[in-house]
Length: 372
Image (cartoon, rainbow, N blue to C red; front, side):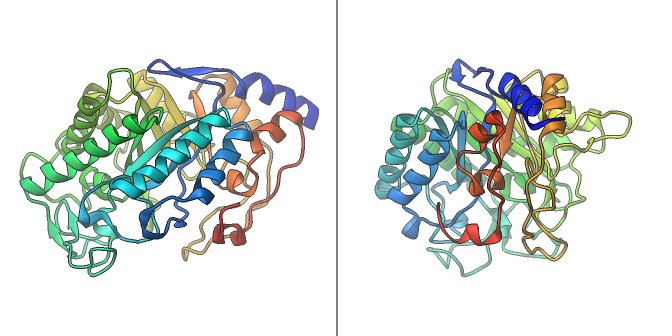
């Protein structure tokens, strides 16, 4: 298809407004959350505000920030990752939200606890325990300790407090990070959740911690304040992992979360164009929409022509590729919004360039070293 024809299709499909729980978005393009580690002391500075504002000015409808630590010492794995608690970090985030709004965008913070991904003795509170559902790392080996009921209650409360702060600061909604092998996902995944209490066992029981977190966040904010939930099958270092082997199991996972108050799901895949289950072309986001009826964001290598992570964990340098496959799926309303990651790191104006048929800047690994 010609560049001009693709640009016309992109304009028609990507610039359609959309609404999540009463929040109007100007288009269907979302900035995917990507850890940048450029917030010394956990405080986002003016460079962070400018970074996100540039993407809003470039045409992104909704920005989901990089993962931000909730207020529990066990999640602080790095002092350069922003926090979403405390006076100085929250003051910084207020400036970020104001800058994005001034550029015409909407913004959600992504709320995050890293679980057993944190190594013992690291982070701003090095003597804090490494917490996870069963005291296991992603490799199934012992690491840290299993969470007690008091730990569970404290972490859930930390999520709720950060969500309430987001609304107070003027953010447009929140996203709960339940993907990629971090704490909430560790509860969802049988490989890391070996509990025998109410938080372990079958998939519905393993979803209890996530559902209680969603419910606490929902109760801490206004009824019309959107709550997103990001989830994935794959994990860092375990790309073939599966929470659900088929649609029935996926429904068992998602239904408790939808009932708890999720307004939109963010279904994370490494390649948006691949079918999730045999016998259907639907990707994970497509199945999520079909099973829940909720708004759904898809994601996975949009605009890139190579894997973003190699088998040894090294970042490749993808070039740019067309988006006709994406437009085909959006034309059939397989999912509602599309999140763009590294293509937006490379080019803040990616949405506008795509709709104008202009070349976009290619992603290079060097771009990860600073905020541009």
